[in-house]
Length: 271
Ligand SMILES: NC(=O)c1ccc[n+]([C@@H]2O[C@H](COP(=O)([O-])OP(=O)(O)OC[C@H]3O[C@@H](n4cnc5c(N)ncnc54)[C@H](OP(=O)(O)O)[C@@H]3O)[C@@H](O)[C@H]2O)c1
Image: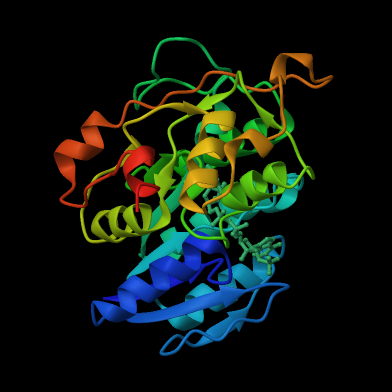
């Protein structure tokens, strides 16, 4: 299987490449601003906003599978239009598409969200991820859209970095914003399983345990041997811009489909 990872320089993209190479797959990656050297992975410069460049690269490489992990939190042209460009090019090349989506497209509510719940975005990033899903599903109904949550692991995770910043007084973690974090290794394993499967449509792939961002900060503090009392916190409800507060993804369908175990966040940071 020849796999093209779009966003290979990113946290998830890098881990997908690493695991695919370890499994003996042929892997290529696209890079944007950050040059990366991944052993065994040729990299190709690509700006997703350039529809013709996306089409040219995918037509030239003819991958069996395209995994699109790329996004920019504040750029609609990358997150939404770019996802459509990748879906069009992958469909034209006959490649299976695994598109990475986000829990951020939900508004937030106390009840967990099933896989088939339609987006209800409350802020621009969530709206861009929702638009991306609509485009991908319309262009390629056979694509799988992986809705995931906070991606955690080591210090390269922006979520872990935010926790470390809050332990150092450089950021504040919300006590009233809940998510279901997932380990980058588990998510990459799930992505590669789905790359080789034929599941179509949206699939929630997140951890089984919901925590507030502040609770995540406490877990990271203990994992790093830092006093959790140093954690700076605040409330999402006090922020000027609306944010999705309580977003718990119900990933039971994924658990039934996948052999990769999706670990609870307290287990991930227990070691
Ligand atoms: N991180 C989370 O906690 C989280 C939570 C829920 C869902 N997700 C979803 O999971 C996926 C992976 O997240 P991640 O944290 O691994 O992302 P990441 O580390 O920020 O990587 C994103 C990648 O996208 C690339 N990119 C940005 N603009 C681009 C452009 N114009 N053209 C081509 N590539 C571009 C970046 O390259 P440069 O840096 O070189 O520009 C980077 O390699 C995303 O789809 C995200 O929406 C993430």
